[in-house]
Image (tube, rainbow, N blue to C red; front, top):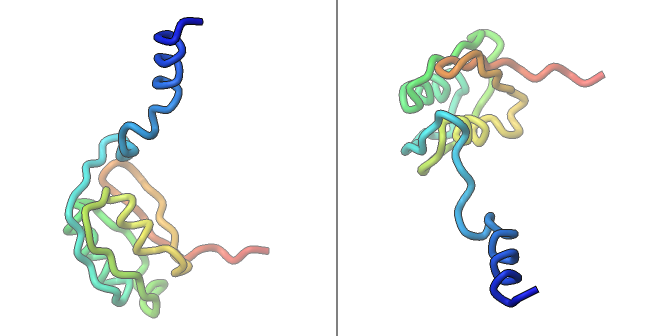
Length: 107
C-alpha cells in the first residue's frame, strides 16, 4: 500500500478529532443565563430563553430546585444540565414543547 493511500485512510479514520460534535437535529446553540432557583421559576425562564413551551404540574415541582445554566448551549443541553440530579425528567413532546415531571421511583 502506498504512503499516500495509507495516509488518506488514517486521516479519514479519525473525523471526530477534526470538528466538535453537531447539535441535535433542528437545534441551534444559543446563550442561556438561568440561575439556580425554584424549578417552577427556572423552567419558566428556560421557556423564554429556549423559545419552547414547558409543561409541568406546579404542585409536583413546587419544592424542587434546578441548577444554574450559563453559556452557549443547545436548548436540550441546557435543560439536561438544569435537571441533572434533581429527580426531574424531561420528555420532548415535539420540537417546540417539553414536559417536565418527577422521576418515577425505581422498584
